[in-house]
Image (cartoon, rainbow, N blue to C red; front, side):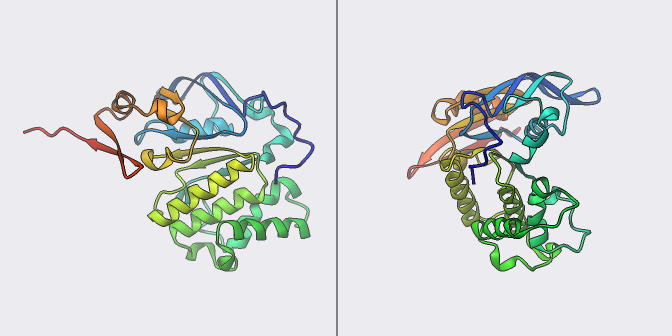
Length: 271
């Protein structure tokens, strides 16, 4: 999966680097002065409450949003200057953000979209492209659903198909936005296990998540966000009581029960 020779990136070049990045929509500032470096081969989670700017940060990394201030680099290049390297970036949006419901597509067709950066929009997919699609479907345990219409799939199934679409592109960098939203506990664990396998194979993985306790078991780095970058680093060093209280703006407790960490948020109610 990782062996294409035209992506010769020195290992010391970060996969992602943000320097003093501020992003907003009109006059509304969503991210303010965010500086963050994620090395190649890392598995990071971006954590924070709703409306903290997590999805905005991910879209800024992808080059879908242009910062009002600051600098963004992917593999040492600004997103707009990635050129052919862009095809090595996989993106998994939340399933409800994928505007595919109106089209009569099979799950297989959606996964094949991941091959378009490699084959272009004019050429027809070749045997190699179909093989990558089949492998991706098998890897997310959705080979049985290849011929099902996209609109007939459940939210969890759509999320796995979008994951397969990203994997079909053979990415070096995989960005995921709340991939476990609307997914049951077993499917959540299965997805995180897959992400850990991909990381162990050499892929850089960055996932936006609200599952603070669960994701902490898998990643080797976290960025805690609430408009500003509250803290970042190794989970065991960063996910402290003080960080969680700052990030969530209320009393948050990080517990370890049976070896599995959990976060409990206790909100104060007026008497």
